[in-house]
Image 1 (cartoon, rainbow, N blue to C red):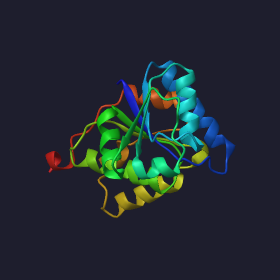
Image 2 (cartoon, one colour; image 1 turned 30 degrees about the vertical axis):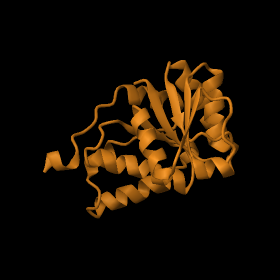
Image 3 (cartoon, rainbow, N blue to C red; image 1 turned 180 degrees about the horizontal axis):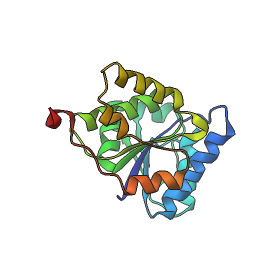
Image 4 (cartoon, helix red, strand yellow; image 1 turned 60 degrees about the vertical axis):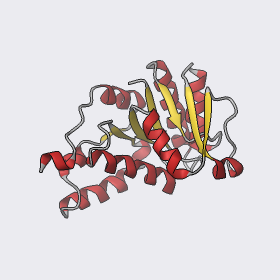
Length: 189
């Protein structure tokens, strides 16, 4: 692994623990010698993870669509900022650049991007690991939904079990380093 693609909020959220965890993840990523790919903003959890990774000496690539670049404050201190024509190009580029995908707390955008990489893994479009940094139990309601969807027969249990979930950044990085991807959905039928 060389680069981790991280999805998280451009907002800091309500709990200071989320911002601290994002910064801790950025520091741990840099200490592990990994680079960061993320949404390119200087605000919220995005800014916290990028600043910490940069401070730790990591290469940080931001990927931001033109429309958001006009509204969000693009981080000016990145190793590289790529501006794309739109969200679809942004998401595809972030998938291309990353060797694994990690979601930190966030909103609709974070969920959209993370669910897309989960779906693509299930369909065999990539074999890269997908993980959640479950700060203060943030993702427990989402995991309950996914377990329910598996119980109802809409998600194959093996794909749910393949999602790495840890509450500590270093534990998550270790799990990513030792992860073995499952065969995609159609190869198992």
